[in-house]
Image 1 (cartoon, helix red, strand yellow):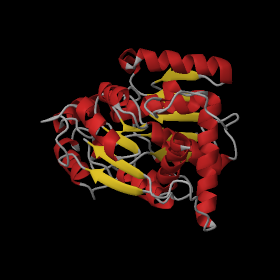
Image 2: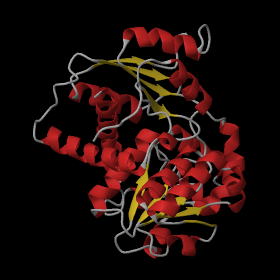
Image 3: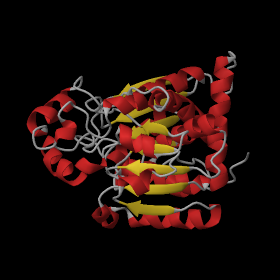
Length: 341
């Protein structure tokens, strides 16, 4: 497949890609996974370099980038939140220009999408958006790969995103369903509709009109879960947000927890997905602290389970989250291959 566009091309926002290109990346991710299993490694990128720039801490994205680079024969350097002067002594633009002189491709995990846009504008090497407050595009490719591996195709599938659908993962699930023609139900507070990014929303609505599928909003658990094939969620307070937000978010979203009852209301083949980390027990500092502070007022979080219960998360028949996490590296490898070919 040839992308007839000026170089460098950036994987900065999924709004700059077509349905054909997204589906190609999903299929390439699946092929990379198969090749790695069979001991087949590409040789065309050997000696190339990838720089990771992380203003937010990371488990999956940072490690997936390392694994992808290693598989492709590349060298990878990680800059953590305190690993460079960007944002303190040096601008995003200047950093982009510096790394252009040193590396072949960059991955940037940050806060506002404006930083991604600025970096891409000044970079003369391809940029991958490793996460912004607007979207998580490498996660979207991994999620679509996971769904295709589990169900064989996207045709006729119903996806439910539960909880804070106005955040970057809510937007990312909109992209995923709109590019592939899946039906998407946003299950959360109805007033969150007004807080969604209108540019992303309108882009996805145009895709649904072309590709099929639909978008529906509800705060009714039974209506959301009925005939659902995939029920996905995300944390209710994102990395970098203040812990003080928990009380407000619990007040708004306590009834949107993914529990066993919700899963049993869904289709017989239903699967659960979560981009992780997930708060489902008392084995995290956050889960324990939320339970101690708010468990008496909101009993559903009294055991450390917040956006999803432990019964759902530990159910191997339902939970695809770890396969989803494993697919992060193949999605990044596929994106790197396409941007550098």
